[in-house]
Image (cartoon, rainbow, N blue to C red; front, side, top):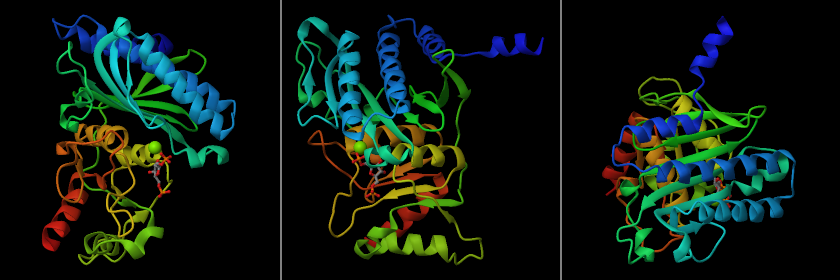
Length: 320
Ligand code: AHM
Ligand code: MG
């Protein structure tokens, strides 16, 4: 009887998206089809990662898989991938109304030692279907319809938001299905972890240096924060979503725009963090307010629990 009860609760990712879609009477199922193709790409890459393909091959392979999966969905028109210099404009015969920006395999320096890596994606709608241009993907992050990532780690987890909270699904390899395991993820308002590449400290600005100093030597009598840094954005953000805290990839003297890419790293993660009750800040503004001018643009970013990001915002306000 206990097992029968469990099967009642089994929510696959496709059933979840279909249920969401049915709430919108105008929906014709295009988004569901697009998502099913993304989910297929994630399963394919998960299987390739598990087989231990070589790093270079895996990067290229993942990109090919996602490009093909997205084009063949018949629901996309402009694709931006971290692996391709130029955006891909889908053949008119196969065009649909969605634009997808993605990093097919982020954290590639971690592949060969078995550390978690992931795929990140953000989805926009085209503005004018008779006139598709690069402008369709150069939109502020707040105009995104959906965002997510898939983490290939000790288990394979897909975290998705369609603008109505954040849900996490874990791949059951024996079923080949992503099952809802983390419903309605909400971040703790304040966290006990900070996450940053401290090797860059000598080039930080004063706000970041002061913030990190306070994490180690709090002035209010509270306990110091713990440092956790994987160097794989998907894994660092996954932990931040579940446990709270703050992830920083700031600007520094050598890299005035930081390292992470706006369209397929900063925006999707900012979307998820906000949907889970946290904040995403660039050092100047709300990250989702940024309007990118080129597809591979970079931006500094601070992502995390609401109160922790408030602190870094206050330090930047003082510095200004
Ligand atoms: P990549 O696209 O070359 O893999 O770089 C992105 C990765 C992110 O996953 C991670 O947050 C960051 O680079 C780590 O950078 P660093 O090694 O400078 O700390
Ligand atoms: Mg990347």
